[in-house]
Image (cartoon, rainbow, N blue to C red):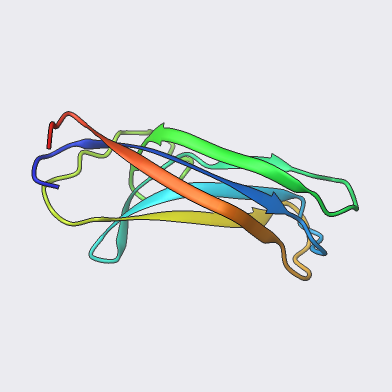
Length: 118
């Protein structure tokens, strides 16, 4: 990035409970600078309480918040200074007892720099 900008990021994936007892798939986008998370999206999530395995769509689109919490108490948008960054898609599962594993399918992400033409 050659000029300071805010980052509008978008991502999606499908989550399958498989054999886990967890009920909710989660998805967020992290912006890293030198290996440290400096900005994050709110968390997209979807829940399944069916015993059968099924794929559930997850998505999130947002201007990234400063910090590493997808639920900041006082959200402020991150202004990325010029430099090199890594955008990382983070998927997970929660909401139950952790047994076995779930699967993320066909994850994708993209971004748009706001406030710059470069």
